[in-house]
Image 1 (tube, rainbow, N blue to C red):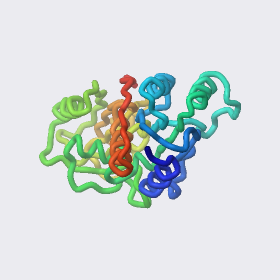
Image 2: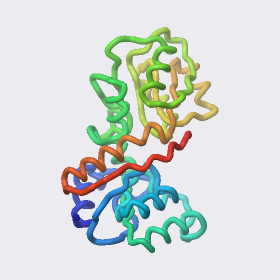
Image 3: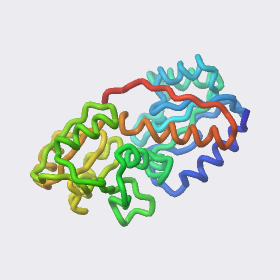
Image 4: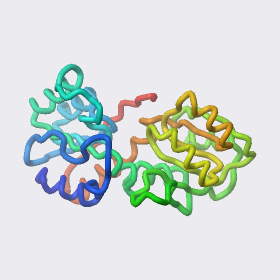
Length: 252
């Protein structure tokens, strides 16, 4: 058992969540039991993740995508209302970290991608950011665009979409997990050979071609399933508490 307040304090401090301007509140979003007996981690606080927490007897749900996003209606009704009702009924707390979990240099989603792809000499995609949301890394050896697609697909276990540029080989890689396809412009400004994110837009095809940066869409969910697992493991080790990870295999 661990105190919910102490877990929140540790997470907020570790992720420096107060230093980020975000699209949703970071930290505790729904308060449940004051004592935590088990943590369930998931990318998104979906109905399936909530039901898994109930089934496993977890009373803290730790996610990357929580609730209360900017622009959402205020009334707690419909699908979101059903989710929140289930959490409250079962005294389950919801703890969510968005950009702070993308950005963290060891626990974060971007750090996880760099480790999976064995990228070296990591630097900021945008040097002006205090806590870079995107990064740049380098392959040990250059690859062809086709070989790199196969490499990324294998490492992430995802059928990657490749939007081709003219560059014959790839070594300098820009990357930002999730829905950051528009950062391909920043990758071009930093003379990257390729750029990786999760989603793809219609305009991304033209940007890859005209900016001459290979683009690899690797799945919003697929690129962001690692940070929350790293954070869950770190909390488990810090507070000697059990955690597990729920995978829904969202194909987007």
